[in-house]
Length: 91
Image (cartoon, rainbow, N blue to C red; front, top):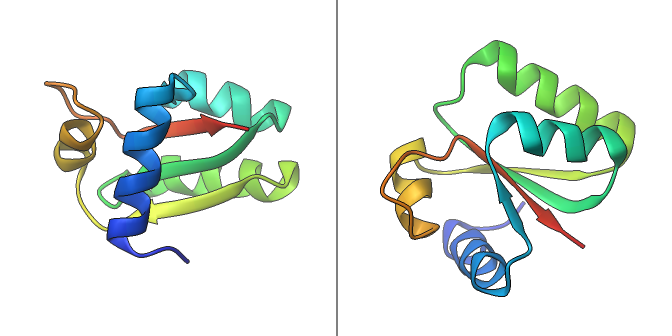
């Protein structure tokens, strides 16, 4: 499990490099294909969505990290003016 600062650095580097995919639907599609190296989900994600992401990540072998902050904070870390519930970081 990565610390908040490590996740923050990884997310910012992925956004800067253009390897981050933002949003639940797109991230879930990538997770089901097993293509991202890691997925990051905000800690305020609804339980049903969190369970679906965790199940699909486990089946696909994708590392899933829960960000110790809400979706607004995750959005700000990504440099976006809107909340980001989940993002996938491509390999």
